[in-house]
Image (tube, rainbow, N blue to C red; front, side):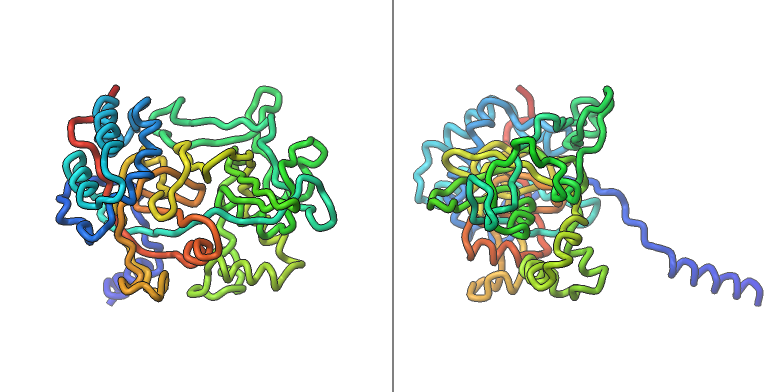
Length: 391
């Protein structure tokens, strides 16, 4: 009887104990192109312009990275040959592009330990209204990068920290945390001449920080494109999760649209809720085409993918396989997104070996898709045939 009671107590305690998840670990598994769901149905040539943009950097420096994918990412000579061939392909022939990718690359599936799927979200180029001068209407600043902000690539000091970075300011010879969002919104940077432009909505500015880039329609009709130029070093916190924890939103209804609606309906609490995300982005004006991703190239709608830079180098083609039935209700494919993309960006919320963020362009349609996208999916990196990375 005593042993049975003890056993029951152990079972009960085990049931109450949290299930410990193993730490993230990218596992690479070789597969064939025939294993890629929907591979033959894509318009592969539509990925070539995005690849060409990445090639501008890849022909100068191979995508070396201290990871298994990085070691498979190809040498400088291999990439120069790949990019030269890609530049000569016909712009509108999907069969030729598909044959090129199959000839020059081989696919590897990426898993998180033994799990093949992960979260895929979407982002877009935000659109705001603004002015070069402050006024009662345009009273919310977008700040330039402060000169005392110091960013540190930790991988330069320890290989185990490859892809990780911190930021802060130097105080008496020590790196200290920079001001958080709430402090900056309360005026911590005011009077330093850092205002790039002034916009008419704190909520729009907040979502611009999440997206990382945007177009500001100025009061004189001109368009100013702004992009990421630094982050304050604080951890990114999803305010949707905070609103869910407080019972303000239902779990099945946490989208960009629902969060925006809540902030609009609760203006007196909006600043408090937005300050729960201490991460803050600084901007620069972008000339020409944009927005610019972390690889330093202009992103391509529907073909640029943000990944976790801790696990992967940028510039590699990636086959994405995900489904979200309500993503495009009019799509006969039923919300399937199976297409070739290029890993060209990263983000504060993009963490994990199987985690992606699809860039959808700008405008109302792009914002609608990106705001609702929260899909389970898998991806397969295409690594060059011809040996490991090196110069």
